[in-house]
Length: 195
Image (cartoon, rainbow, N blue to C red; front, side, top):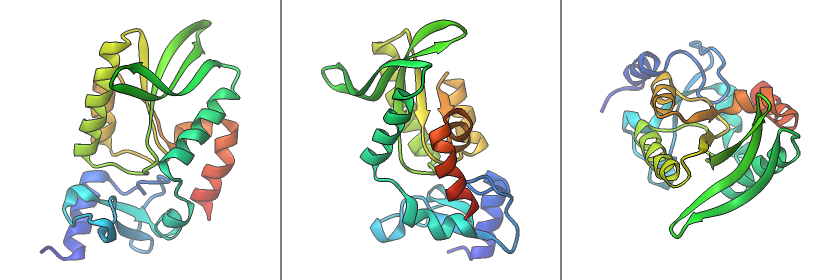
């Protein structure tokens, strides 16, 4: 078993010196190692299940985390209230065995286009989980080829995870994007990141 100092060095090299949730710069005074899937719920100590957080996010993460359906409904509500979206539907059945979290149309550059939106309430993801999400969204792209697939979550991805999603033409709506794009998300994101 590696000691915490060695694990921290490996994670810093892998993910950079930024909090996985808010993006704050990490220093010796504010850095914490966190389990993505909590150890108390069966999560492992494997590097793939570890991330770096600032002390603030580490302290409040459990207290402000949404449940999956609450976060999905919240994203649905803020999209539905935005004038650049229409025909917003929650839990859209696109085939016999495939349900997309949110299906909508978005006005971009004066044209309306379909969106297939996958919503996850976790703030951080292992590469294995990112690859699983990519696989699911590729299935959706085959079923609805004219829809732009979007991955929504309230955190910040590693550079490797961003690259995987971008290479698969999946649009990323992370916490920072949500804060800049949707006014109703901005206040909650600022509360989470500035406590």
